Image (cartoon, rainbow, N blue to C red):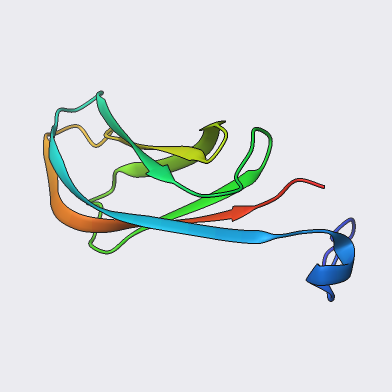
Length: 101
């Protein structure tokens, strides 16, 4: 473990909660320099929580980002900075939220 890193060995005692959500989504064509956003419901998520996002298919070098934008709501953004148009297509977006303590 690197200096400054902390291992949370007992999540329950630390007060940290792991929340999840998912939804099917069909991504539109995303032109270079543009992005597409959608929301995923994650019950219990609140502003300031940490968010991890995954997609069930290759995102073709787009950048996926997620953040809690309202209670129980995570906004997921696919940003295309590849130099060309990208179509990700139909997939399932999965979100993992770690509650801020």
